Amino acid sequence: MTTTETSRTPSAGPPPVVTARGLSKWFGGTHAVDGVSLDLLPGEVHALVGENGAGKSTLGKLIAGVHQRDGGDLVVDGAAIGRWDPARAGRHGIAMIAQELALVPELTVAQNVFLGRERSRAGVLRPGTAAEFERIDAMARFGLPPHRKVRDLGIADQQKVEIMRSLARDAKVVVMDEPTSSLTAHETEKLHELIRTLRAQGRTVVYVSHFLDAVLGIADRVTIMRDGRLMRTGPAARETKASLIEGMLGRSLAVTFPERSAPVPPATPPVLDAKGLATAEGVVDASLTVRPGEVVGLIGLVGSGRSEIARALYGADRLTAGTVTLRGKPLTRPRPWRSIAAGLAMVPEDRHGQGLLLMRSIRENIALTHSRRFAVAGVISRRRERAAVGELAARLQLRPARIEAEIRGFSGGNQQKALIGKSLLGDPAFVILDEPTRGVDVGAKYAIYELITALAAQGVGVLLISSEHEEVMSLSHRAYLVREGRTIDEVVPAETTIDRILTTLFGTDQKAAP
Ligand SMILES: Nc1ncnc2c1ncn2[C@@H]1O[C@H](COP(=O)(O)OP(=O)(O)OP(=O)(O)O)[C@@H](O)[C@H]1O
Image 1: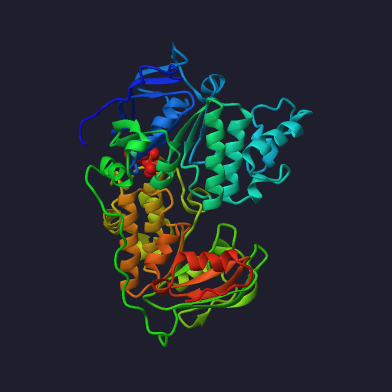
Image 2: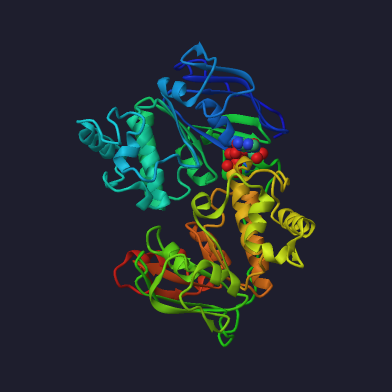
């Protein structure tokens, strides 16, 4: 579909709570949102879908006052809106849960939930807030400890704090940008229940997501965006996954995986050999090997210790027991810089917290860790740097392909690609990819799958962690099952099913039949 249709308000039914007419937003030469007209109805879940960089987040931010529009009109509750910022939007009952979470790490869960609302100084909450927290907690059913510092929470729990914050503000329109990207299937289902409750209360949820199955399951209406423009808005019931993908990309694309290379013979000496790892951060007893040319998955639920095992291998957390051997040499007391020098690379799960410098350019971000590689007689050659980064940007299909632009101006999915690029530039022998396709659209996902397969074909050993079990099942030669910080079993994904594996993971001491 190439024609641009605007959404229409059904002739009967309640008037829209927000109406956008010809909204427009430029970032430098990028027309991020281009003449978008849209109604948000009370009591609807309105999904926004589109490729990375299609303008979904920017549209959400224009509605929530995070960005100022450059053109077009915004009508809220029937009144035309002039200047617009998050505080004004908040007073009109519009809240946004952005991809880049806006929490204060040093404050507690409850303090963050009521941030900007509490009147007492130094983060001391007003009397009555405990009861208020309980009320919100009862509605959200996340079971978060109110007094825990946010910096001690994982990214999934931090996302839940943001969601509770919008509940605390009693928002009637909540824009959720990729709310489920770090949640487990079970947590996603709980969030969807909460969204249904909000809808039943007559509230509006704008749901930005790349998970098209989830979109079809929860949304009443779907708006498809492409290149800043609105392609169509219509009832979710009339869409299928294929029709959404076609609308997003302008062409059809089978959601498939590239073919795995042949299994690596077991006698091949491993590139990585880890035995009996333990850390204070939750690894209890993890052992695994990865051979050159092999993609090995870690399958476990969020919170099972998958990412913690990755951090232990990389040296981000200190080992309290166990050994890591890389290319036959022991990594005594692994630390990230020693691991990188020894040929290990890691793409972390939390790209903002651990991976990228948002104020620096793509080139600087990609090249920073590898400055020595571009040195000629001790001086960094910008020309060599630009050539290598440019080549990587093309391989990763980075959009826009401007390697000197600041990272923060790139869409979430394109930031993720830059992060992967950063880890690959050092020609590592072993790569850890923790949620490499999180927040990435279908087209770019396939590019990342191809990259993983290509890395293995070049003889690199890959450790793959993903909440999308289908990815691990389709890309890995072998996989370890992880529960409570332990590697409890090893499977060959091509010879088993995810259902069997999940039975093993959920069960107490059942073994998966391979
Ligand atoms: N603060 C900014 N400064 C400069 N450019 C920006 C900024 N925010 C967004 N852009 C650009 O605007 C376009 C739309 O980005 P946006 O984040 O809205 O896309 P998106 O559809 O939400 O993508 P994703 O699915 O990857 O999150 C992109 O080309 C992006 O690079």
